[in-house]
Amino acid sequence: MATTVKSTMLTPEFRMSFPNLVTAKAFKGSNGKEKGEPSFNTEMIFDAENLDKFQKPDASGNLAAVDVKQEGVALARQKWGDINMQEAFAKTWFVKDGAALIAKQEAKGKTQIEHYRGKKVLYAKANQDYPPNLYVIENGKKRALARGLEADMAKAKQLFVGGNYAVAEINLVPVEVDEKKYIACYVNSICFTRPGDRIGGQSLMERFDGIKGGKAAHDPTSKGSDDIPF
Image 1 (cartoon, helix red, strand yellow):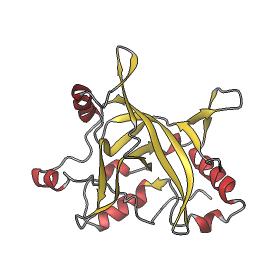
Image 2 (image 1 turned 90 degrees about the vertical axis):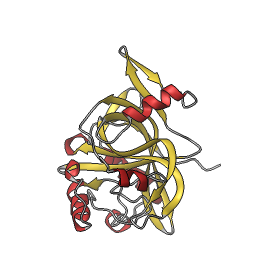
Image 3 (image 1 turned 90 degrees about the horizontal axis):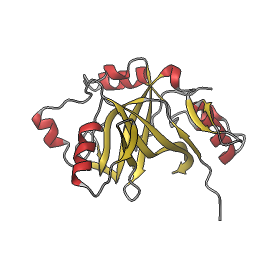
Image 4 (image 1 turned 45 degrees about the vertical axis):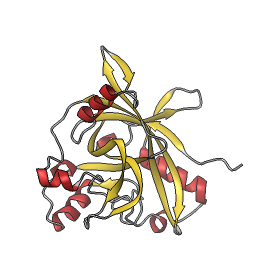
């Protein structure tokens, strides 16, 4: 059986944007139509200087700081050998630049864009059959929220919202779809750390429009990308 090429790591603290972590939903495009299978997902907004502060076990099993972009490069090399990185990931690199996202959203007439300024963005998802573990800190201790308990899910809906902060365990996995190469980011677990200014406040009509699926600046089915560190 082939071994899956992946890198499991802990993120530094990030800001959640348009998180969809309680109930799996399909992405909803600008035309209102759903794309792809339902999933759990969130945009992870990082300070640019924190991209080299991800953590993963070293040879001794101790957590050590790594650069997430270089992890992506290493995974690509491991999966596909000595490929031309610039050519292979010209439109699919997994680290997005906030300035480029702002430009795209401004072109569409969007106004909720300032949270991207000066930042770097990763889009993380989880298959609907493998929901991410959700955690909170209570009395100084981490506690898992049970998906089968209504009270816990009500709490999750209050905490895992756009603008709040979290840390997560993720897997980076090199994948190829329709002859295009990607570094996919999957979220295994996510822990709420602190509140932040709300991102994505909606009118009543916008809320109605979003019932069947989340809306985010990044379409996970798109082929575009903006930030290649080579």
